[in-house]
Image (cartoon, rainbow, N blue to C red; front, side):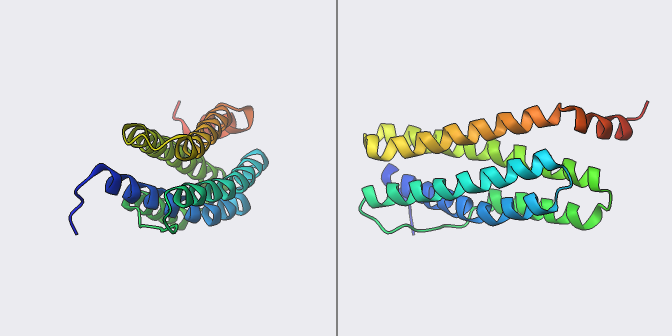
Length: 169
């Protein structure tokens, strides 16, 4: 089916982001359980709870558009998940696996921020209004905050020992 207008593109991208957020609830829960870093585990658990709210906000956007919420696969997200799972299977060192989770989290947050920026831009062009734009902006703000928390964690003292151990002298 051909996509012929900006509104159709917006719905397509919204459905992809809805899929991503739904999938991330389980992914974040899994990473919160599997990491051996307490701060990271708590961060993933907190963001999992935020992500549940983000799913609800996207459902509100669909409702405001007078459409049923629909999920559409996202190749980018699937690729990130495949990469994370392959690395999980190959890495036995807990600290190195923590680094995989940290990196996966940062990559996912960057992609989500970009997705919400794109959705907001299209919503503005379509003049969809605040009932559409506000939930998207709220989700974007939470993704940006989660990314900053992961950046802070990457430079935290408890990760420094891993960097020192893995970095050749």
